Image (cartoon, rainbow, N blue to C red; front, side):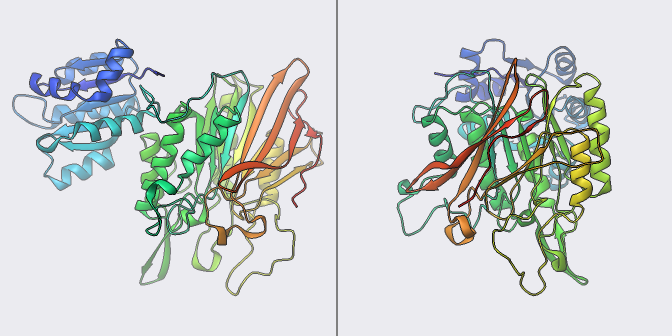
Length: 478
């Protein structure tokens, strides 16, 4: 069996409830196979000392932790946990106050609330497993993955469209066992082909209409992939797509909202995004010396501009600022960008948009391409039009002489009628391998056909040389 250690802090002043919580199978397996992974504090002061001396991945606590049964000590503890970005699960008998529950969710890093009077230890264990992102034990029916060989492998999926347009969802006309899940199909295909996954990139349109139910389904599948490949949160990058926007009507007409995506982001990472109006974030994977920048291309979403991409000056400035900080200590890191909309057209045939619809390119594509090229990005990953796509581009008037790859994924999860010219579900595996001769960058497309994934077209290899390079052979879509 496979075990992966995670550090959990339990803060509970009642010894009976400490024992009850520890009866959870998840915690018992963790404690048995990963000694010293669970720390217990009887009061906030003890918890504060532990937080300062050890790194924790999750805290479980009541919020009535003193003799007077006030909430002030818990608030101080919650602020400390928030400072160290430790997600909180609250297990308490006092959760009837709606205002207090709202405060815990909005003000502090609370990612789960359980009532002591109705405590389901199985659900508590499942929630912990999902939050931690790495199982402490692997179920017998889950495939195993071989040890890491040294290559950096990126699983690039896009346009999952969880909801009514998702291909791999329960169907009332078929038995549940006959409907494969997307996560199960991907893990089975990768295992059968001995493909490792170090990094997961999801380039938007995670849902169909941006509803909380759709995001919950997506989160379950993403957390499954995270567990099955033991991918840490820092190795996951997500960006919103135009379908992840919720449209709401008010007196001024339809308005776009990313509120549900914001909660989905917190459900995955255990914290809200730093930029509320731009879901821009950078993940630097120090062990691999790889930087992945997620750019929000859904800035201009409005009814008359639905589907148009735009990055904007603010994100481009944030990107330059963050990269300057990281490159102080890691000047030779490999840089990859991810966004939803494409920077170059992907359609083979002339496509005339319907009335009141616009072309779906990023409107400031020239500035984005220039910035990413000047910043020495190796590749840009995107989705959106459900068509696999790859090109290399070289911009002049700059010191850089080598090209930059632009790689689009087809739709990994949309139903057949939404797949366009390719008519198959698709995902990419991008492998990066370093040797004395330089860096080899290989892109392999995979399409879903006859109830399984198969190779799509020919692999693409990019010789990055000392950092960036050119395409060795083309990527012809037929």
